Length: 206
Ligand SMILES: N[C@@H](CCC(=O)N[C@@H](CS)C(=O)NCC(=O)O)C(=O)O
Image (cartoon, rainbow, N blue to C red; front, side, top):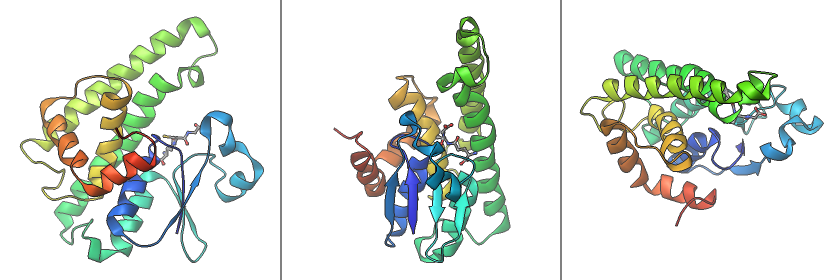
């Protein structure tokens, strides 16, 4: 397998899953700030010009965080990243979809890429504030859903690495304080060997 990623981007969650699984994989860093995602060789692989993208050993390319996570969770059952029961599966997919489609794309993308949402530089601060409000509402909802659990579905699953990447942006990147339950989740994630290895590899540890 090959992972196309950028340090600290949402691809960090898929990077963690690959470490959890332990199967061989190669990493290909795409420098998003230098526009590497728009180069013809990458566009040929992923016309969406985004990370993460996963190239399977049979050459098939998978994009979209929830789809890649779902693939990995099912393709490597020994890693126990995706449960067999329908209720657990639905809870996990519901959480990942909310994180990817709402908290990330509607919220954090406005904060980090305000110029994608307005042609007027004077309006970018308003766009960022709107994005932060969406992201923070989303984090509150996720905190309520987590309740007293350490992990989204009780035990570690593919949903936890999605939650990790938005927590990473909010706390490690923006220096903000997570709601109580998410702070507990963030600490539990940081105690995992896979997370420590990936943070170090992507240049964020100690
Ligand atoms: N819906 C996509 C979103 C992927 C996405 O927005 N990735 C960002 C990094 S977190 C990206 O590649 N941005 C590059 C760009 O917008 O030019 C997913 O869930 O995978």
